[in-house]
Image (cartoon, rainbow over all chains, first blue to last red):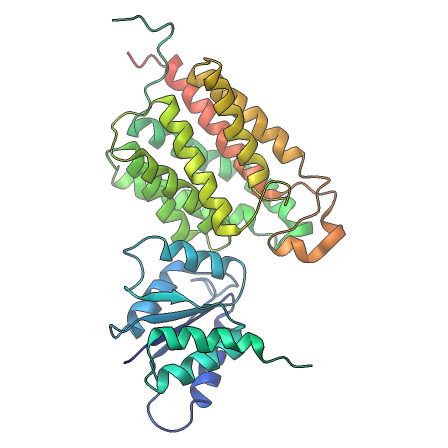
Length: 132
Length: 225
């Protein structure tokens, strides 16, 4: 099983950095494919639907793609893309999780060879780790 | 055959292409105003985002004009999702895509079909954003507009009058967002400070519905016989 992970942020720097952080925390061995889709095409803050589609296709190995978005238009854009059957690879799921914690949980789980359901569950579980 | 009292405008693919061209022009003209509304309670990009999206959608549709009303709307929606860059992209994109889908492949649309399609689109927006009327969003213009359209058609009004009623309801709905406190989107983080400003999304929704009413009027006046 190779589930791909896509990180969507309003900021290209945030998406890239969180992807690196998550990859760095997966430990040894293979890292599941992860792609960042951040910011607008002109380098500003916002959401680029085409970059999301491209990122999802680039990490798709046929076993599902887990997409994590930061807030607002990122989340709405992924939802709108999901409602159109030909945009994102089959088996693409939007994760309901905090961005950094969810990214780490999703990528660690995907890198361990888990299926899409387990990746989705692991990311959602990130909400249960309280900080105080 | 029974005689029609006053044949309404022909609502075909060309009708919606005219709507889109006029909508892009109105959004372009009002973009600065929309951005100004978005400055105190949003991130000051609504006008620029809408202008980019509608300009791109108009260009793409003019280059390869879809043949059915449903396709014009659905493809316009798809272009908005790819090009707007803010939350209004997926929201307006979903509105038009759902409305387009509801029209199926009819070559011409009856007023009732248009009402049902708009309703399907507005329901899609509510579902996507999780908002309800009163949350200070585009739904505060769209929901009363669809209700007014429905009410007028049920009373026997023709499409032109029904859309004129929808336009007024949308404008009133947009104005009525001024005293509301935002409960969705970035403006909701401002809490009570969001009170006293007109919602940019409700404002652009009222503009787009106004263009729809204009398109119907002009289509009839232009003699579509």
